[in-house]
Length: 114
Length: 116
View 1 (cartoon, each protein chain N blue to C red):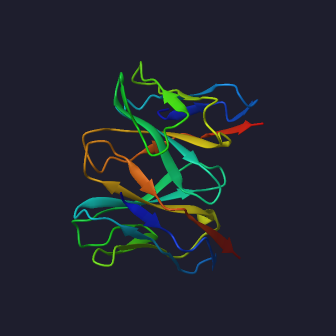
View 2 (tube, each protein chain N blue to C red):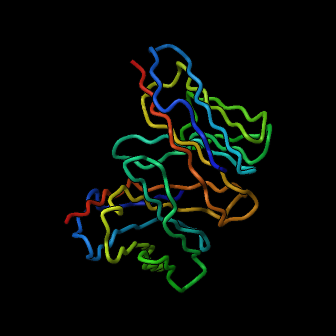
View 3 (cartoon, one colour):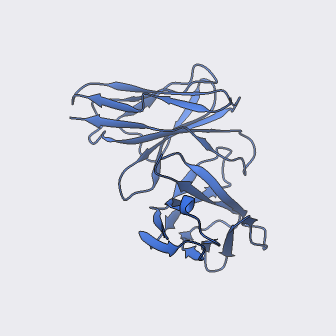
């Protein structure tokens, strides 16, 4: 089955630790995205990548880093510099080059930092 | 920068009835796309319907339809014959045509409850 997987579903970390969230897709999509969702707020874009080895900052990139070494994978690292890391993180992918291409979302990872 | 506003944090509808969710947006662009996404309790985001701004005809997908008013910058979602499975958070999203990335700007969402 084609789709997007995110692991783990729930993640717990101590403050001051970096943590990496996994996102894998087998849809052969060029573009991938990371969003953050907080209660009472919509999704906010953290980073996005249109092709392998290239990525751009979204609206709230501070305290996060990404890599795009493979087309299928777009891991997100939440660093200790992120002031409020506890949130629900969603990964998405889409075809690129066409404006109406739908974004397909993964099931998300709930990160709790204490 | 574009903004998307959903002014109804929560809505309730009885099963089989019709409900309309509101969405307004602010943009200086003349061409763009608009989307409605559904997020059920599983938190999986699901595309409900999409609308190209250059099309005057309102999009329809089965029981879901939109009322797109470009001059008013309004994009409401109408759900007809509501079902229990429609209970979810609904997000309105804007897609700029500048650049090639399919970046979306989301509203804060409307939680829809469906009652018997």
